[in-house]
Each structure stands twice: as C-alpha cells, then as structure tokens.
Length: 155
Image (cartoon, rainbow, N blue to C red; front, top):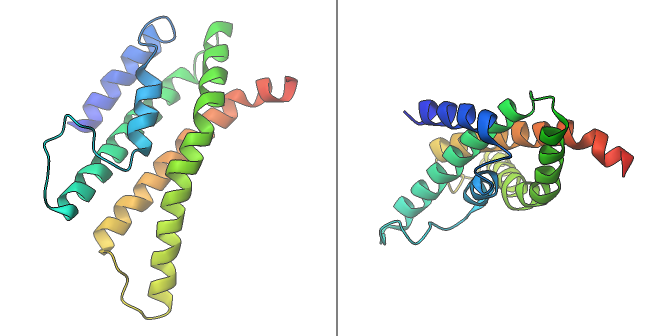
C-alpha cells in the first residue's frame, strides 16, 4: 500500500511540481530526517514502539521522496531544473547531516559490535531497516547531486 501511495504521489508531483504543492518536498525531507514523532501521533508510552514508528515514518517519507525526485529529475524544462537545483541547495545538508550520517553511524556501531563478538545493542531487523533507510537516502542524494551539479559548477 505504501509503495502505491508513493508511486501515486510521484506521478502527481511530476505533473504539478513546482507550480503546485510547494511544501511537498520540504515536508517529506522533514519527515525523512525526524527523530521524534509529530504531535498528531498518539502519545505512546513504549519507547520501542515509538522508535519503530519513527523509523517507519522516516522510511516511508524517504521512499516517497525518492520516487518523486526520480520523476522530477527526468523532466527537462528549465523551470524544473531550477526547481530541483533549489531543492538540492535547501535539502542536501539536512539529508546528509540528520539522516544519512546518523544511519551510517548506527550501521558502523552495529558492525563494530558484531566484529568484536560483543552482542549488538539492537536487533538485526532494526539494523536491516536502517540499512534500507540509508540506501534510500543515498538514492535521494544521488538524484539531488546529479540534477544540481551543472548549477553548482556554474555558480
């Protein structure tokens, strides 16, 4: 269901961005990198459940963002290229600092704990989710760098 929603959102984004839905990409970037649940989620008492929901929110937002950027990066009009360059300038730092680097640190700690025969502090399922999240963020960053590189080189 989530893949279908992401796919539909990317098709709408391809047609309507940048003319409509100006806050779509910044909102997805925010949710892809958040470490806390938004206020509209019910207050949860179980810390593990909060962590699981936050990771699901991060992953789903990243998946939708990757699909939208994949669609947008295939557009060739100058206005679309400028929009992607603007989004790249606004989002790359946040995605790298608050998303990708955090995921890489987590994965590095897990690998270090595994290689020293110390029991890793997290489950293999959580680590797999973080790896999938890091892979999605890598794809997102690839789209942004690839699309904005010509503009960055001319500035």
